[in-house]
Image 1 (cartoon, helix red, strand yellow):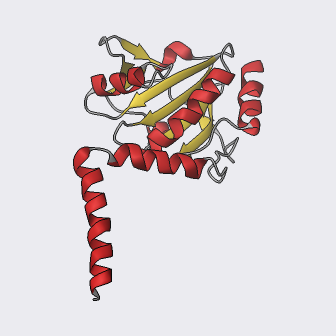
Image 2 (spheres, rainbow, N blue to C red):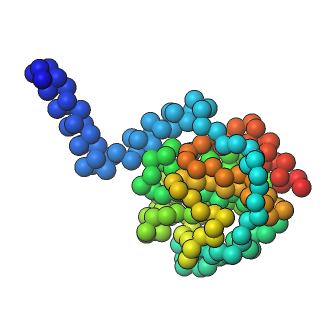
Image 3 (cartoon, rainbow, N blue to C red):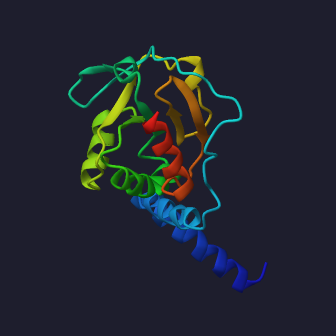
Length: 189
């Protein structure tokens, strides 16, 4: 290996080590992935090829320890986002989701932001520090089989009729014209 190659590798490894050791890795990766989202390449399908019934039999808790049940929201359009503060793709999609939330305020959409962080306070502080409009929740027990996921973030949309009509594993750009129209069509039924 040439001296020039060694210097280049040394600089790259130093930058990576500094980002990792200072904790800046997640915000930087989230920022870079947000740029990728802006390309419009990662969009959710507005409907599953086959919908399936939502299982409302799970509970989650808020930052005050109060238990909530998904069944409380039967008959509403529900968007469930499973995310984590340590997840760069989650960080990347949250600003776009916030834009969707702000655009659709007043529509009857219930936002359930389920954090998989071990410490719910960390997730709550993350939302507060960034002035996100949602409350962070943490799962209480197991998710039903219909809401199993392989990666975070994963987003589900449940129609007022009780059908899971969107399941998106991985980050996506949600504040699009087609997705807004789709959500609005659900809330009108």
